Length: 112
Length: 116
Image (cartoon, rainbow over all chains, first blue to last red; front, side):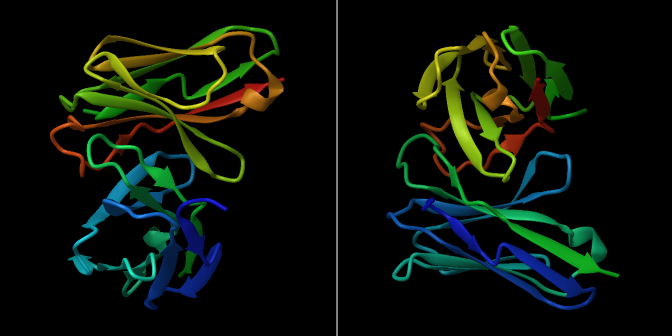
């Protein structure tokens, strides 16, 4: 299986609800990043968390990292219809350079 | 003021043809990448250039040849196109990885290649 596996593959919620997506990986990492991809567009970087960090916030986003379990979660609070997109986690195990390995993504649908 | 732009957005061609995709970034980044996204949205790195020097070359058929005339441009040329090459190809850039290995990637909007 791939480094960086998201769970669930698809998530459908109502506007205003919170959305939680999980990511698991297999090898040691330097950092883990979350990206969003709207339909027909490129990926947009959301947040980066380093291996020595446990939690980061950015607006309505909260990312946690548990290196002992090799897992991360992305929480989107008070979701909006505009949050509908695919969300990818990507791990980087390089200490020099960048070689991101992406998961297969979670398709989030926020219903108005 | 698009940061990473790639052309064309759509490319439909027949098997056996040769085609090119162009990418330009105006972010002043030193590193550029090509990623391939398949029909299941799985994204895989193909190449990476740092300041015109090839630094990552994954197991990609040698029909694919990247060219970087300067650090703001990274083009992808594909020879003898095959049905399996159909995918969305994304260009991306980041700051110098040797100095900033935690740099996030900035992606273009992709080129959807369809080989018939």
